[in-house]
Length: 124
Image (cartoon, rainbow, N blue to C red):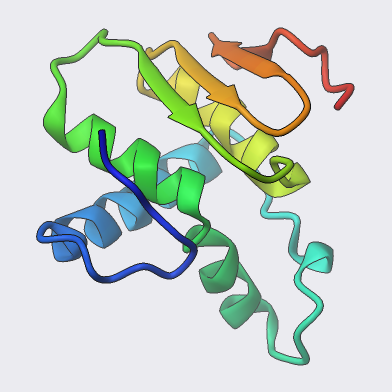
């Protein structure tokens, strides 16, 4: 079990994790993902808002799992907060691009992501 918080750089593999987050961002943008930057309430430019979204804990956890588990392995994440709209959208695309089942348990429900879809049908 590994723990991640937004913007975390305390993990031994943080450089590789952030490189993977960048790769994930590039790959999912190729299949029409658009970051939900209006959710970032900071007064910064659009590129910095995207960077802030890429540092969310669930994206760090997914990147870590992609780096450290065999292809096809399911990824399980537990959050103590509600998953944000951007992470929900990005995780759908990640599940499709990387061909992984991803289960995210947030404070309200389980989200089962597979082939670009979520079990909640985008109602959360």
